[in-house]
Image (cartoon, rainbow, N blue to C red; front, side):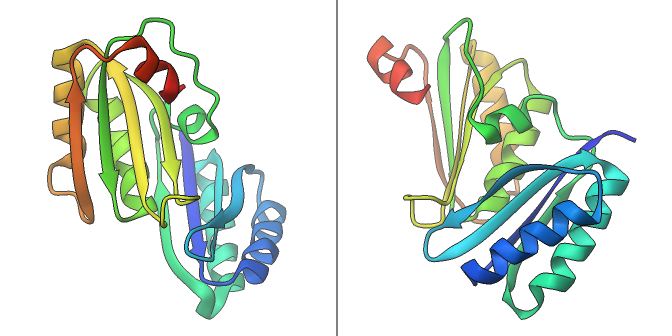
Length: 179
């Protein structure tokens, strides 16, 4: 089975912390993120083999109960997605920059996976929820054509889409600010 991720978003911080504990104890998963998100919610993201993520998600949904506001599960994620979610990407060759913004954390994560699968780009970061009003956005880089193709694929038929941009030749200062 391939690498998968799962996310549970809750309206209670206390229940979110408790739920994250149950999720990592339920199966062999890595805890990618367990943190507050604006406005006053809590998000848990786990990764692992598909079966383990499914088991962890099932437990998270049960334990989160009435506080669960959103969930997401993606099987066979692109290899760049987890480092982009973790903020551990280093960019070797800066190029054009694409930015894709959503009202939803789940939509941003799905879009990042689709963008990486659609074109030869490098995901820089998937920024989710904290200090951005619960929104999510994706930054990516590559040659202009690939960035445009990735942005187009990631935004096609996507719910809660806010907007996107492609900057063909970003200034070094702007590019550095994204890392």
